[in-house]
Length: 293
Image 1 (cartoon, helix red, strand yellow):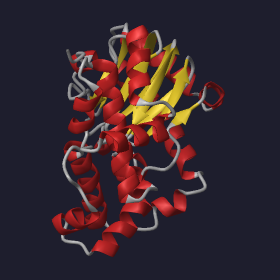
Image 2 (tube, one colour):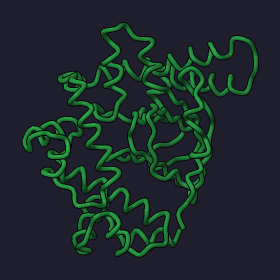
Image 3 (cartoon, one colour):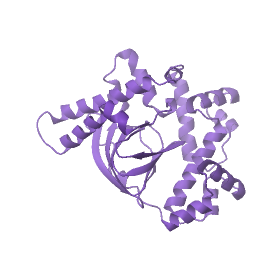
Image 4 (spheres, rainbow, N blue to C red):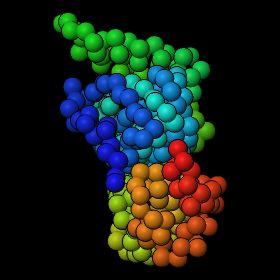
């Protein structure tokens, strides 16, 4: 049986002038299964540890770390045991409202999936030095209070957190590459391509079919897809499929063969080889490990 995504009970659309803050607890057997929304999500770990998956990247986080889930990124959270979080949702229009006109596009690009830089996690020491830990603690304290002016303080603390993130991202070595092509049309097409892959990964997708779908030449699509995602189309598709297969192995009782078919692999041997290549363990062993836990 599919596990329920308990985070879906929190409605990220229930925004307060562009921001929404809450605390959350996840257990090992109740992960936050892959989901997507148009908001920027900042996840601050207050206790425990978890495996974080966002599009084609994954990492382990623990108490004091913060994760950035960019807008429209397919992401999931797998706690190692019991894990507690403070969660801040911010809409991109809200962030842009703080910007000078010429900086609004840069804010959007740094916080949108199709312009994602490599950095996704801020470790405990960074959060402390950037003042992020202090701001999340203040948001948690304010959320439990009720007084005139609370909303202003909530937004002020959220603004300090997002400004620290934007400053840090803009100083990364590949920031110039992020800003290299600000064509809204191209960015929209690449975003559409990534969304389509995440929704149709079980189908027979190819560079040819995707470039035709987006009315782009084969070479132009291939070149820009790799520039935006950091991976060629085939690698990105395989990573997306295997990440979804991992989720299904962890949260369902379906057979390995059925999961392989659902994730776009008709050749079970190839699926097993690809799974082991990307995850370091065979899908059968992964299923046995999950059952043992």
